[in-house]
Image 1 (cartoon, rainbow, N blue to C red):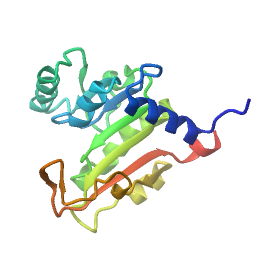
Image 2 (cartoon, rainbow, N blue to C red):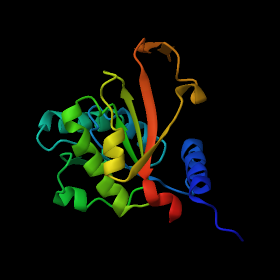
Image 3 (cartoon, helix red, strand yellow):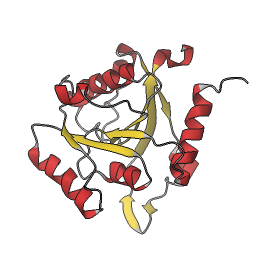
Image 4 (cartoon, helix red, strand yellow):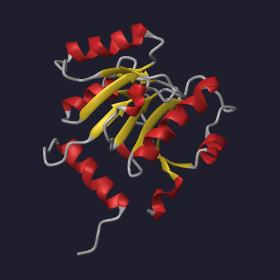
Length: 193
């Protein structure tokens, strides 16, 4: 029987994840978690989630813990990870399948540190992917050169592919008139492995 390629395996994982099946449990860290909405949702869908935010911002770590408690997820670990630093906490993360990062590209001075951390996790887990969304705040800000430098590739995910390109979603005014982008980042050489 022919081995499924990486994209086929990813589709199967996504289907099982969204269908709530227990046959395959995704291991999902969220970086820069803040209020942890993506990580909490992933945990509620059955993923093994680890939430993280800057070790230098204890209020952010407390926010992660509070989100877990309010959602009945007291078992979800919360780690202090600072972008761009290879810390014992980063080294101790178990294998991962999908890395989440929601709106973490908001300050250009942090872009390389974010991608350094993501690159480290992807190198440790070559078939993993980094799923991220961000609000476009300036047409002059880009991570393209950094993706090239770190040997990463990105695939844009059009929001209209899943009905998220509306001005009002789920009775909320978010995203409003803001431009929101989604992409999946992986190792550039992952195609050849």
